[in-house]
Length: 145
Image (cartoon, rainbow, N blue to C red):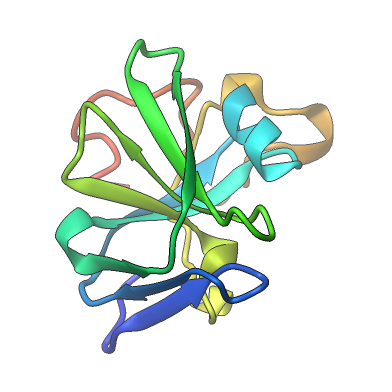
């Protein structure tokens, strides 16, 4: 997903706003069980941006937990309406992951891959037109996706 202009997003009640000033690094679907829980569906669709390009206005609440990789993720959400706005992995603090649905224009989302296909629900199989990985792909694999 590349943008020629800044992107904006935020929560349902508009108490928290996002302003993204740089291009997307990656965009894809994740079928891990954590993303299923957080999305409330069979997968999460998300875009990763450089943390320095993501500007947040308004206060967020957060939840930190250990992922199956052993890395800790901190998910930020609106304390008023509860919408998940972004998360940061402690192992990669230079990258911020934003759910596609948190963008004001989610139609700009263009997935390039699916990960954790081994955890996918039968009713939400990975898109067979995209490169798909059973788990987290090796470093560099999604750069080519």
